[in-house]
Image (cartoon, rainbow, N blue to C red; front, side, top):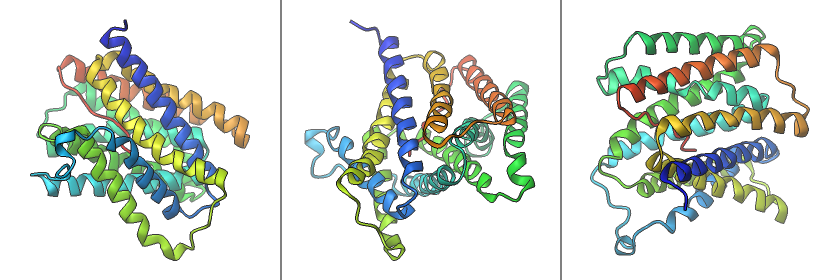
Length: 293
């Protein structure tokens, strides 16, 4: 029988694997319009959530006393999701994943203004180190006017607000309801993209596109379960396996080899976010960095 920490470790591992595989499929799907891929992420992402709705809530599961906060969470999440999809299609996989690790940096900054939290010297130093890492990773893109490097940063900004909003919502709302509203909002947004001339997928492509939603939905639920069962300090380092997976998938599928600058910058960003997590643990707080894609 596994302990809670061991179960939490397992849930985090399969969550990282699911997110990594989802990123690969999103990058592969560049022949399909972004809006069409969003539809599959939203529609199929709802499927795992439906199994979590309590029987006594089947007919009123959508009711909430905090609709405006749900709206802001969904809006920020949609901005983040569209940005990461565009980034994955136009930048090396390892580069995108490296920059996304900077999300806790922006969450720390937002927490000052939105949660009135006090940020000490250690976390300010971590923020500075993280920004240096982002500059090192992005410098070739900025110098050659490759604006696609902006998108993973926009993703981090959106995700950071999502983390703050979920922290507020989770005090009164169940995880499945938060996830349902987000997946449903993705599906609604996708309907605005019919003008992009959606492509009729083959059966195999239909299977892979559906996996984007199913993997995204399951990964978020597994991530939440991991944080619920285990100590944050134990499971959080597993998130950085995503960079190893990105390097492996990027090399074998798209012949992408990370540059030395990317690896150095990624190391600084990871170090920065790890310091932030450690300080949160010392302060006996929990900082949510779920991707919520």
